[in-house]
Image (cartoon, rainbow over all chains, first blue to last red; front, side):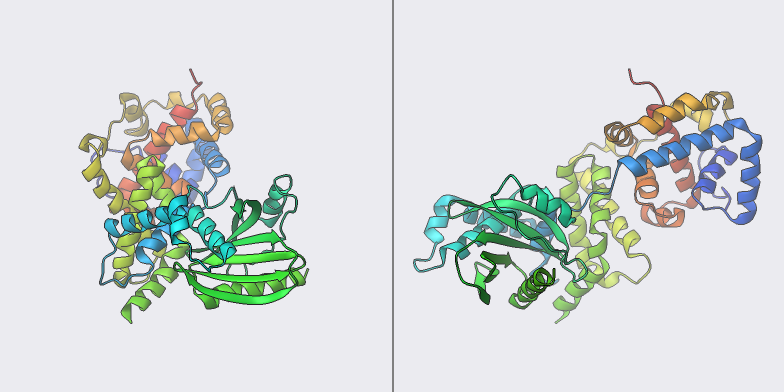
Length: 257
Length: 182
């Protein structure tokens, strides 16, 4: 590669080629020529050191940040449930934000609460929605279960079982503490493409119980089961089928340990 | 239904590059709030334009859209003066262009040490202070790891321009970070 195209100002070619050389962008002949120039010219040698130090510092100290799950949810809200013919708009987003905020605020929660509804199911959906609206849907954000599980120690009497379902397509996003029916509860957050799943684990005296699916509490699906003295609730806007798959995978990963 | 197809296509092509897209938006905007607006706009544009994606690097395609979204966002929301500047100092010109004063480069060791010691905040501040054209080129190469020709594609500039911008951006950063903090 040469500096062939006409930039407005003349550029010091050897110096440019040093950058290209360090970036692995030169063909073998030019690489060799530049390597020799660097060896012969202390000024170029010094610049090589500088560039390498800079690249190393950037690589080491500016690590890649995961996409904030809240943003994922926001994108999902905007494009998720609409075909391309109807252009999703800011107004639509604003409306959905207002709606979700209404859901999350206490007064409307009471108003919306169905008389005979399951209060825990409602509370789990509320926590999930509230988390989507918060700056972070998690208090601890990590895809590493050995980071997430210990985080709950000291915050809750019982820290939840955390399993790794990355290979199955449900990467761990993090965890948070929710308050369900006045009790603090451990909630794990898993991802699925652009969707999030909140999985709350509550100590319970219930007898073990298989999966039960509840469809569409305000647009969110729920899967509930009980085992080993823990009542599990998974909430997401994923389809009921996919959420059930997640629950099965979680259970079998737990029993397989 | 075509809506489903587009959605599936978006998931397949775009989903795995959303992190890069947001990171790029953040470096372009300089703050999270603006970056989120830009990122969202870019995702919308990518979704609507998913039919026009014709293979090649999906990441470069998405980053191109992020950059366009950022530029139109800047036009709407910021003073023009902040967008296009190429304000090399005289010292930099002498150094980078026309084979200037090479002696200035010779005091390698202290500069290199300072650069090696620079913490994240210092690095971020120095990168954020780069003029937009230099910043985008530097971020695409040294943070996102694009090849020169991909950067040329994303920024719609010839290779030579990419090379000179990258060299200048790095030179500026070395100057800033490689100098004792006052």
